[in-house]
Image (cartoon, rainbow, N blue to C red):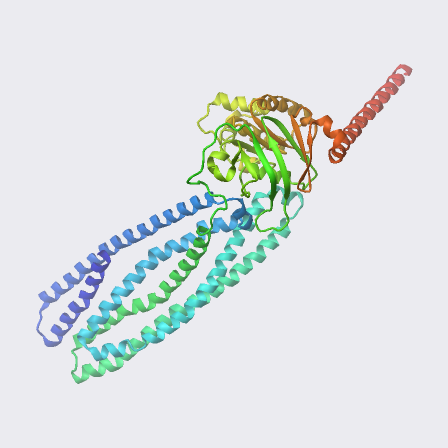
Length: 581
């Protein structure tokens, strides 16, 4: 309504000008009437300003609310997608969607929508008023319009194609910058700053190249619209002037007609700008919609899914698994029963240990009849209910840029400080946390950059222990922990395993000597299952791993003993020299 009122006020002003000019031409008005006309024009101009602010505020406010709704929907949808999606899409691409692309959609739904509606209403009203003054002159004025429509359509298709490339290049720039900043320490250690800058420059130049192509099209659209509008003005001045001379229309009508033509010039010039905004918005919306159309392979909630309580047994029956998009199975025909207690999983690199962890955490789908919890097929169990049974410590510790307490309490934000400290004690990290100036309130930086690798792993372990989940899954998460801390941690884990299932993937066999069972994987197959002593006798792979580690330990001990002997001999020589002196 405000936009309609603005256009109505603008249309009345040329009529007032016509009355004033014709009155002056015919000497039928005096100074008082002229001042009244001027006051009326000023009043209408003030109304236009107020109403224009109102519709801009309402429509632009609507576009911002729409932007918020789309951003929230996009973020919620991204959280619902599973690991297979994130293997195909980098974080930089998704950040670009939530920033640059979403801004283009907001501009199209804000200023683009305003300009389009305004141009449409103004065009219709101005042409109607022009036709009221003289239909023949109006027909001459709109004669160049088809040329504008053809030009705009021709350029808009190219604008869409090039802007899509611009957005794709922006995604690459975002991803490149994110990767470089996240791995800044590695770049500096390997002195790859110059190479990284060169790579970033290549992507930036490609982005500029496609942006300049977009700028060229935009540069043609605006002048083309203005040129065609000036052709209409030239036609009106030529033919309209002759009509004034012949007396076909009054000079006031001619002035009003030109005023309406100037009003029509704005929609003609806005057509290029609106087309640009809409093409950008449509391109970005299509990119966002492409992500919104993605569906998780694992559904977050199954309508008829069953809830499950304390698990007594987890079973794999001839489990075979292939990652989405790959052809080679990573796990082959695995049959295994897991009961409360400590289960160790060992094997050479690439044997499928982490893949088995990912399936236990329900990060990937499995075929029916292959994975059971309490004799229920996991495909019949509510996904969230299934995941709540488990706390997971991955190979690489995932920490957030917040306090140590906040990271430990991530899975249980309502927990007490006493419980947080108890979990840290169990993970053998409490004393080190207290050594920090701010203790548990210490900010650890992005991805725990202010902590050592072992500290990161133990904080991640404390986070998992705090949940007290019936299944604790540890995927080689003690690799950076020293032997003393490992012994303290294993004492707590063994106590935890008395009533719960603890599944521990590790390349170090020393923590598994007291495990209830140890599963040996090789090339995706379960080759042996038993206790430590049984596997030394029965499994060649396990025996090789054990022998390799024992050899490494013996070499370390021999080196230490040799160093001690050399140190003792050196000390004895010094003593003898001292006595001799």
